[in-house]
Amino acid sequence: MPTAESHSSKPPSPGTSRNLLVREAGIKDAALIADLTRAAWAGKVAMTSSGHREAAERVLQHLQHGGAFILMKGEEAIGSVRWVPVESEPQVWEIMRMGVLPAWRGERLSEFLLEAVIHRAQAADVIELRLGVRADQPRLLDLYAALGFDLAPELEYTHANPEEPAPTVMRRLLRY
Image (cartoon, rainbow, N blue to C red):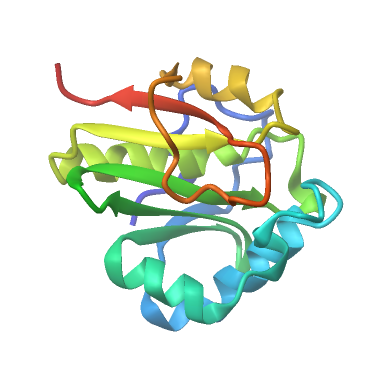
């Protein structure tokens, strides 16, 4: 199992990364991931987001078709991220529902989760990763750009909430 330190190009402050582990989620983790998503998004993401109503059943569907990672600090789960292949393009994955619990924000720990997905995708011969940035979260554009994602206005995010403004789609090509 890779440690979080091996997944970050810009490690957090000294001492933060001790006892961090990014582990792959299994089917049994569906309820935990749903709880993490709701807790990580509370007070951070607009209440209209469907992430606030995340259910284990939906997470289970994502796990069955794609996968997820959970960020652990010692024995405590403190964040998660998911991915699923785009239905019409199985070598393209969409990243979704990334979040870190409030007590652990500001440490750049989400980078560990994103780097883990990038490494997994490369190992699976995925050619492209995509993600959607909510209109009310523009500060995330710079974070993702620093990790090699480019704006892709020609693309639609297939997991967008039709009740909200369309997210900004970003992509990272993994093979050229």
